[in-house]
Structures are given as structure tokens and as C-alpha cells.
Length: 135
Image 1 (cartoon, helix red, strand yellow):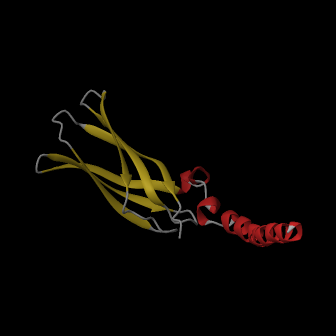
Image 2 (cartoon, rainbow, N blue to C red):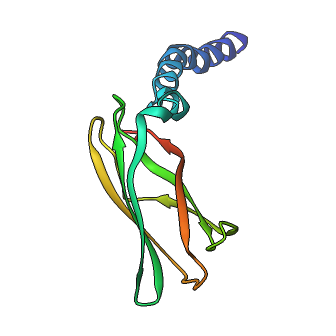
Image 3 (cartoon, rainbow, N blue to C red):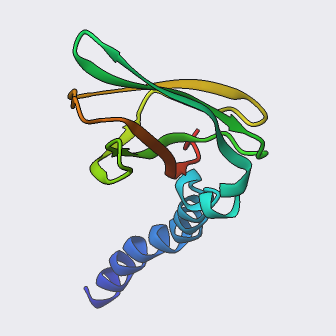
């Protein structure tokens, strides 16, 4: 009986020992762990054109993002700051450009719509962060 219990333990331990290297290799090779850090490429991903318009009572920010990096980016976070005619900050809007992907070496367009404010006289847009696609 004692020998049988030792065999059962070995039958449980051996598969785990065989699978452990495979699991470790799989988790260390997952795409999310190998993603590029946006901060390293921030200067290569630029807003090259932006403008503010009003459409049916809503403020609309239109723009272009130029990606001069070797990496494709998605889930781009942008921040829009709005100013009155005196240059005073009056509003901030952060948005994730969910369906905008910027392939390496290309320029893409984006649109942000918001609630209208009659006092919006000017604006600035900046890219906060972005993610490399998982697949």
C-alpha cells in the first residue's frame, strides 16, 4: 500500500514538472509582456494638424496624428484643453481614441465631439499615451 501511494504522488508531480517549463515559456512570451513603451517613442508620434469647429451645437476637434515611429499604436489617449478669449483655461476633456490605430510611418485622422461652450475660443490637444496592439 505504501508503494502505491508513492507512485500516485509521482504520477501527480511528473506532469506538473513537464508542464511547468511550457507554462513559464508561454507566459513570458505573451504579447502584452513584450509591448513597447510609448514614452520611448513619444517624440515620434505627433499631432500635425488640429482644428476646432462647431457642429449642430457641439464642439468638434478634428486632427491628424503622424506616426514616425517603427511601432503601430492604438488606444491613444488625448487631452484637449479649452481656453476663453483671454487665454484662461476653462475646460479639459480627456478621451481615448478607441477605434483609431496609427500604423508605423503613417498619418491618421481623428475626431472628438463634446458639449458646446460659447466661451470656447481656443484649444490645445496633446497625446497622453498609447498602447501597442496585442496581436
